[in-house]
Length: 294
Image (cartoon, rainbow, N blue to C red; front, side, top):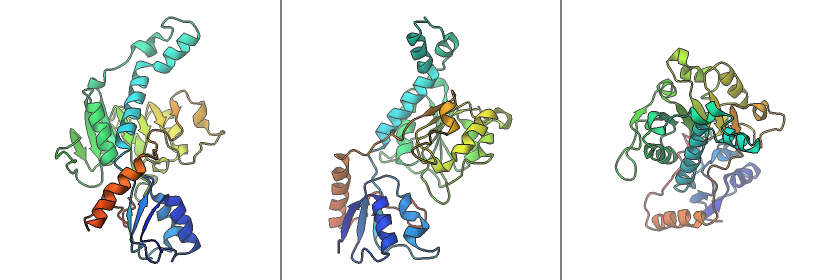
C-alpha cells in the first residue's frame, strides 16, 4: 500500500514479475541505483505494447559525476604516463627499463576526449579533463542542453556518433543501457575511430554499461587497429568470467565496476531533496522517461 518506495531496481523488477499489480497505490519510486535497466526488461514491464506503470520513477543521480570523473582522469594519466610499466620496473629494480612507456607520454592539454553521453556524468568528466587543458567533444542523440550553471560542459557537441568516434584521442562511454544503446558500439562501429576512417585509433574507456559493446567485440577492435587500448569498468557479463580472453590482454585494463559506487550516506540526501519537491508538487529531479528507458 506504499505511496512512496525507495528500492533497488532489481528488487522492484522481481516484485513486478511476481505480481504485476504489486504496487496499487504507488505514486513515486526512488531508485537507489543510477541504472534502472532491470525495470525495462520484458518480464518486468510485460509484453511489448503494455502501458508503462502509472507511477513516477526517479534515478539515484547527482552523486556519481565527481567520483567517475576522478576515476577517468586517474586512468587517462596512468595510461599516458605508463604507471603500470613503472611498477614493473620497480619490482624488477630496473631504472627506467620501460623507457618508451614511461617517457613517450602526451600532455592532456594536447588531447581530445570524446564523451559518449552528455548528461550529468558526462558533463563532470568533460569539466575534469578540461581543467587539464584537454578539448572535449560530447555526443548524445539530442542537442546539447545547458548545465546547472547555465553553461555548456563541452567544447563541441554532436549528434553524429561516427563524428565523435573520429574526434577523440580517448573515447569515454557513459551511455546507459536502453533498447537504443545496447550493441550501439558493436559490429564495425568502432572502425570509424580507426586512422583508416579518419580517426585517431583512440583509447576506449567504458564507465557506462557493458552491453553498449559486447565483450566479444573488444578484442577484434583492438586487433584491427580500431582502438589502441581498452580501459573497462563495466562488462556485458559481470563478474567478468575467468575464462574471458580480456584478462590476458596487455592492452586491456579490467576494473570491477567501481568507478562510481553508491554510498549509503548519499541515498538520503538525494531522496530528501526530491521529497521536498514532492511535497510541494514540483517536478522531481532525475525522472526516468518510460519511453526512453533512462
